[in-house]
Image (cartoon, rainbow, N blue to C red; front, side, top):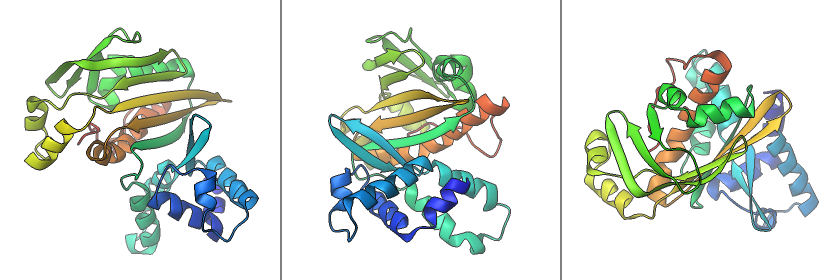
Length: 266
């Protein structure tokens, strides 16, 4: 956490975070445009932000895209905002809200570090006994590439030929298509009005990927959700909650009562 505070203390790094928050998923060249800062300096500042887990990166071909990662700000907020006068940490709360705003590119990236093993984390991502505890969702599938997936969420079963496993490399990467927005799902999720439900059904199917990387005694987990704007509005709020619950379950054996389980479309 000290690394986060040190990274945020520099005005140039805060400016870079502001630029990424306004338009996430930028390359180094895009971030340098219009800045009165040398490319090498921008690269060094980004390295500090990435080391503090405030920025996540994803390679797309030869391009390295940079995304704001809200996980460290969430951790700071959970540790202190509820313990002190909210007015005294108003700026921090605003930053947390800003970093969780919907992204401008058609994908959402979220990174955290979990004190576990790749094998244990893979089990938590695929075993219904785990997913039901921290997510409230289970999957019927053999997790082989190309296999179908049936989603079971709060009494609703969602089956569709397009719900499939896209990649399945045990302990390193898992990817699958998102669930179908069925009428039953729409009836269950009363927070969505008819207009938003219609948009969700019209948009191309989104996908989610989990990348696992051993980093000493911890595992770096990066969640990347690609889809259209309406879907990402929901998952950008839902994934931080789900990942926090997953992390807590693996590290403590319990999901904290203060972190409600939710489906990423809620």
